[in-house]
Image 1 (cartoon, rainbow, N blue to C red):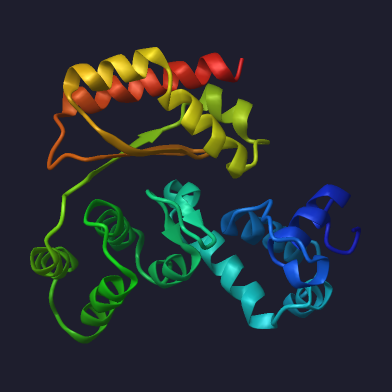
Image 2 (cartoon, rainbow, N blue to C red):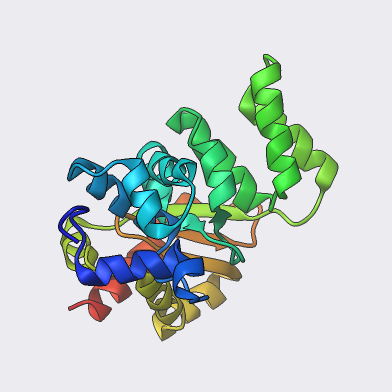
Length: 241
């Protein structure tokens, strides 16, 4: 639509992703971040939050939330934000809204806590409350809550998508990159390396600027991180020629 600056395809994808009650579709074509990106585009094109909300038959406040997460959440974590039900290795839109209120340095620690310690929504809320109400450092708060909860520790490995690859995948939907992530993880070179290093992967998620690998380990050596990252980028390059 000209008013919003969206193509017909983008309009349909927004209706299926946010305006589900209007179209009766259950499938969401966009992730929360992609929704926020399109809403921000519409505002830049002169539309108001009220205009967008009216078209999608949703509350005005919801439009602002999507835009805030898109703009305020560190871009390197955009690919991890998901609608419910939230898959392993990702964070919910509701939690992303809370995390986006904090400085990016603290965002990194919060997201690591969610994925590495598999914090529940209640545990994340406890972290956020203590951050706001006490003088404790975020690392101390996370450590104390993790100690009480127990469970298997994970390691979140983050890597940068090269400039060359970034240019090739910018037009991919994040849902398409999700399928690409599963494909790359099934590649022989990756499987053989992980087997050799005795590393069990819980989730690989590829975004447009970064990728994340969640492994069931208490620690991973820097050399191993560099080697597995190189393999992932090599296989990604082979798939997006």
